[in-house]
Image: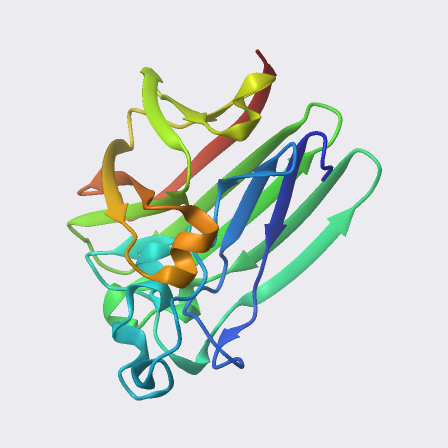
Length: 228
């Protein structure tokens, strides 16, 4: 990506890395060098940060990264919770990162596969995030989380508009399938000094919710930047 357009970063790996967060398959998006879809980071270190209760801290949990949650079940902690089938390709026109993150979740989710493909279209200045999953059993709800420091409005059906420092020259929108996903929004007040220094007093959590989803489906989020 570029500091003058959309920028995409993503990761695979496993959930036993140094200073680990449970975030296999997470991604971030910047526009004109400013944050749009974010990794929150870590609060001020405490004894709990390096204790068996580490993953009770919200910033460590996959539900507060840009990842799916299946019936409230988040990614597990440990080396066995890892990405599979990881591949990367890039040229002058596009960059693509793909992986299967199903093994990053406990068996109780019933996930057979969750293949995520992240593609940056350099020429069109857009990003596509395609999630294709297969379940072994029915579930009540699947939720896709997007974390942001931007104010977000539902500007049209199937369209979310992000307002941030980049908004003077452009707008950033996320387009989604309104037939499959219903948006909900949470405000997260920030009290920790370390996080406040980066993000200010508030962050926002977008939840794209699929109620009683089919056993197999594919959803694409399109992230576009348009001149103001």
